[in-house]
Image (cartoon, helix red, strand yellow):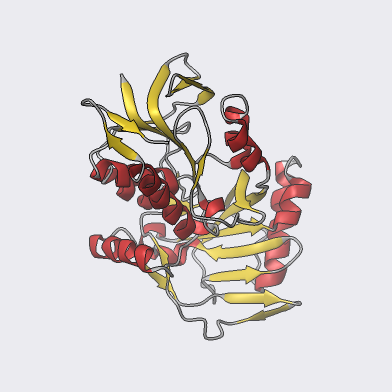
Length: 343
């Protein structure tokens, strides 16, 4: 079988692209290397408690994404969490200062976004389908999975993190690999700590500290689901994450919880339980300018997409995925019963 389009990655960008293509009647398959959907919009069930250990919240600034968020709000996928965060700057912690646009979260966790997008795709989403090689032959993309299976498509959307996409496309699409090579990604070390229920005066703290960029009161998003508990999420700064990515887990946890205690004014050093998540490709160092998705010269139609092409964040990923789908649709022309693509 040859699909109209293969989408590599079931994060927000990949699922948004799949939705655009499926609504237009294009036969599409999504390949995802992990078990989950939504990429870094990720939620872990931790002893039965949902906790966001990746993306913490999202905003909506563009009219297009605002309409999508309004739909999610109406369906109960997400809710308005807060209209401002505390800030830690130059050694001082300050309350929200009038930055009052909504920040949205999901009661069941940020992975609800992936499930919501997938429910509208109506196309195969193959999980734990790790792609290890990509080649193009006679106008068809052939993706080889880790289990040896091959998936074929007339066009391809790549939403994998740039370093991974670069490796896979190096031989079959060198122009695309070169473009991706220029997009650096920062890692993020995330510590998730659980305490007996306590009151915290903040919902989130955005920080320019050398060690910490974010401290989140995850339980304030879903207090009824964390009955008797308080869960805090600490994201290390890009500099700390780069310098300590391979360090000992216990040392990372101790250092970040100690510094988070100093910043927040709350003693977070002795949780009843804790875990560390190492996100290798967490955010682009500098999002690429020049369009939310990029069509690249290749043996068959190829579009690169992802948050790094649209300013980062959840909104950027969604906008990039929609742009990728629309880019391919603008190039499809009618064939003899099959979809072909005009280059």
